[in-house]
Image 1 (cartoon, rainbow, N blue to C red):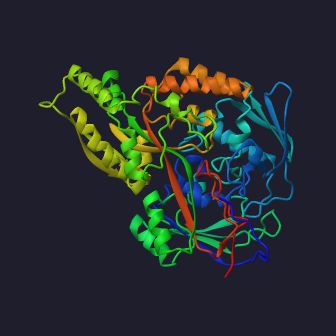
Image 2 (spheres, helix red, strand yellow; image 1 turned 30 degrees about the horizontal axis):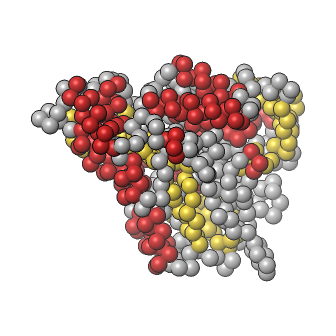
Image 3 (tube, helix red, strand yellow; image 1 turned 90 degrees about the vertical axis):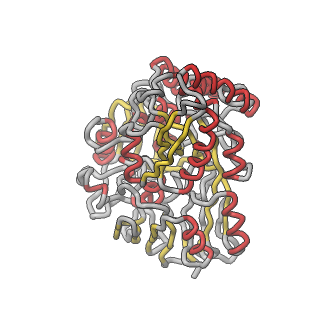
Amino acid sequence: MVLTPGVGWSQKAGGVLKIQHMDTPPSASIHEEATVSVAVPFMALYNNLVVFDQNVAKNSFDSIVPDLATSWSWSGDGKQLVFKLREGVKWHDGKPFTAKDVVCTFDLLLSPDKLRRNPRSAWWGNVEKATTTGDFDVTLHLKQPQPALLALLASGYSPIYPCHVPSADMRRKPVGTGPFKLAEFKMNEGIKLVKNPDYWKKGRPYLDGIEYTIIPDRSTRMLSFIAGKFDMTFPADITVPLLKNIKHDAPQAQCTMRESGVSTNLIVNREVAPFDNPKVRRALALTLDRQAFIDILSEGEGKISSAMLPPPDGVWGMPPEMIKTLTGYGDVEKNRAEARELMKGAGYGPDKRLKLKVSTRNIATFKDPAVILIDQLKQIWIDGELEIIDTAVYYNRVFKKDYVVALNLSGSAVDDPDVTFFENYACGSLRNYNNYCNPEMTKLFEEQSREPDQQKRLKLVWEIDRKLQEDIARPIISYGRIAGCWQPAVKNVTLHVNSIYNNWRFDDVWLER
């Protein structure tokens, strides 16, 4: 849903936009983190080479627009992507932006040890290097053609960092070129951004600042928004049932229900007994009643899918009739009967139950499905104890594989197989939380990435997706729908419909009050 200025509207400068936040971000360094808790408050500090148009609801190649780059072109062999850069841009500390900063950013992303962690290193595995022949031109050199690379560069997860600021400083005192500067970052309290008066986009931003207030309890967040204490809810916070409450209690609120691009999924540490046994992992996948999750959590509005975002909002997801044929989908009771036989073969049964902790992140969108998962695991003689972990610790734990079974949510920053496959399933990727590694599948990932014919690529993607489900690589439970709401005084808001990571620049948003 898009709100654009109507007849009689004129943009006003000034005012502070007050937004809720659900938890403390681990840091302000987007390149080192893997959660929307970081992308939402800190995207406004930075710029990319290119970006998804902030006022077009659906991310696509057609909605990619210039940012720090003014133009771009591909070489004839598809192995070089050349950018012309914007002149006269300043970092927040007054130093000039040049091509060297782009080269330094890719040096960070392509080096194994220059960032504390690099969650999306798999995005850049096909990039050999970045070079420049002047202050305002940059070339990305690729090992193989990769048509989707431009979309990865347009994500909110792909900002350009300054050469002159150490990466450690970017965690608490980040310096960007974006429309807002960081004024304050307090753990468990909030984040304050202030207008960048030297922003290169003349006349922007309209706002004097943005304040994010951290309120861990979702009920408290909803009540405070309804009471008018905040201009916006956290943009990825509102479930189908909660939206009904807001519409009843705050009918003036502007809201949009949309696809999140986020899957609820099961991650399993396949190196820890008994889950080093593929039959036990298969039993876990077979016991899932996906429709029950959807009915309980989204009153039937979520969608059953596999790795890729389902249609119609998703470009690459399998059609429903194909989904029904995948391992672990279809007849739940039949699947569970097979699962119990597998558990018996592994030595478990009604008189010998498997006890374990089911880990999850300490926010409602993780905790609610985790409770359902624990109930469903009982069907195959697994007694799960819920282990709730704060965000800053949760991601450290799953990166280090310090868990046994976890209920996880995985957002895809861009609806493209190069993001989903390489990030979540490639050997060695930091966000491949359960260490699935199949070299033959990696070859298929690379093959689909190089394929310029979109119909041929789609068939390859479906083939890969089916094999991932057969391998029980990361059982996908469902894709959810979420809403964000804002008060009528907030103007020119666009919430993207196929990603929750890419539309938080806020340079065009203004307040009518």
